Picture 1: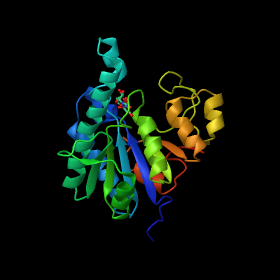
Picture 2 (picture 1 turned 90 degrees about the vertical axis):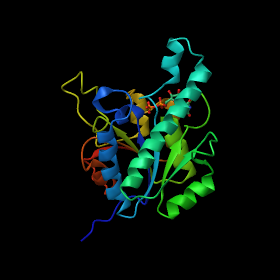
Picture 3 (picture 1 turned 30 degrees about the horizontal axis):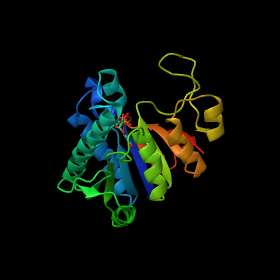
Picture 4 (picture 1 turned 180 degrees about the vertical axis):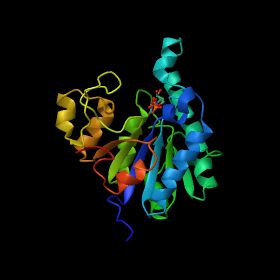
Length: 239
Ligand code: UDP
């Protein structure tokens, strides 16, 4: 029997840094390939997939500021970086036979569609993967906040935050060997214990709109599939 997915529509947040692979910069074709294979598995199950991709592998406004670039200018550079990543993912997904649209919060007609909520939802209903580029279109925000905002707008069932670790831990597992992973945790406990899941703007948006978050390891083969099937061990569910 084919297992029933727990979610019908998901928003997958991928960091730009993850796309860079071990080198930490640019775009690693091996990572693109792996991500496309993982995403195809869930698309083939009939799950509607939206993606928000970061830009940290190319540019971040905050780091630009440290080297003398005006913060707002740098943030726009960061947003443009996310469009480069979105196009790379689009190309890779299409190579694997998936239908996709990049929708940008900053108009660039020759490259992709502008973000229009109703059109995004329509694409999803037709089985197209929608990749949201250019963040929120405004400086001083992050792509985590973009993920929360777009997920709420398109009525996604959940935000899946794909990271390098397999969930939320009691302490940093890289530094503290006794740290243990939460299978589930409440929004309140994450605040109270000062656990680092997303920036506060992104996190609060999810909490206020009753949108669950799952933190999982996107580099662990098959874990995206396990998460959408509702496997409680595949990550940490925040509700
Ligand atoms: N950014 C922005 N507004 C947004 C989203 C992103 O100004 O709504 C800029 C900001 O400079 C940020 C950069 O784009 O540092 C890249 O995004 P982010 O750092 O979230 O990428 P990630 O850490 O996920 O790779």
